[in-house]
Length: 290
Image 1 (cartoon, helix red, strand yellow):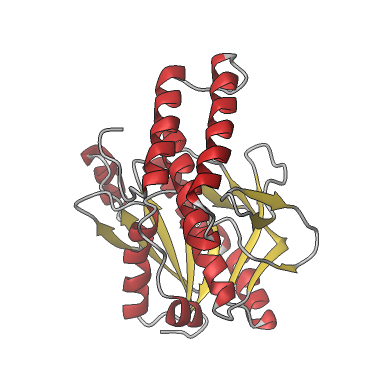
Image 2 (cartoon, rainbow, N blue to C red):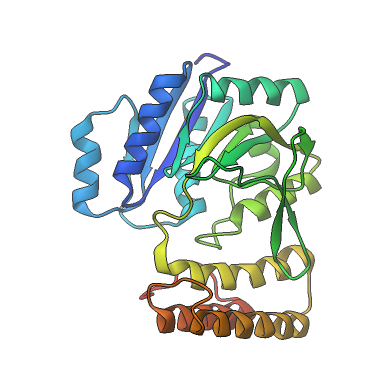
């Protein structure tokens, strides 16, 4: 295995068109990489689309949907078995738009002696939509844009280059979240373990947010925000209950008034409040029958 080669891990869940678009952009602009595509128990039709393409990639088809972290961990563990030293977690809804993007991220990682680096992300309209991720004691996060390379507490996990040292010292991504907040947990703990995380705005990709998560966002995002605050910040349960009750009530009013777009208002409200209750009670993992 070339010591400069990067294992690109793509988690596919009913997003074959997006995955193939990302693969095409990698093939067009990159060199010295290996592809590992993990299918997180997509529909039969979606799996067949990927199989028919006969991609130059290692394909892993899971028998159940393990969630974001566990699905990516399958790919990471396989890349470690193949003796890669660098690992790029790339969401299927991302796209490379400049030559040698992965190579430039790797160069920045080596120059900074970093353990995780992430690029500037542009939305589908080409507008900047990323930055250093800063978290607070109620579990909420915000992006802090920057035009300079900055050492960060956390980054968006949609396109994240990791070193072998990161996996050895920080382990694999936390799987209890199922979807959302796991990369924040992972990188915040990396900082605590003496590892370094950097935001590299000179490198750009496109990220088309949330193409595969759909309605489950209202449940998992609310639940996992509360859990993250309890786990990482040790925020007391009464504080979290009061704060997130007010926040969820406010969002409920906004949804009912049409100020927040949802396909099904009542379903979104129900899922949000269900996430609130489960977050306070510490019920984690995959939620069935959403």
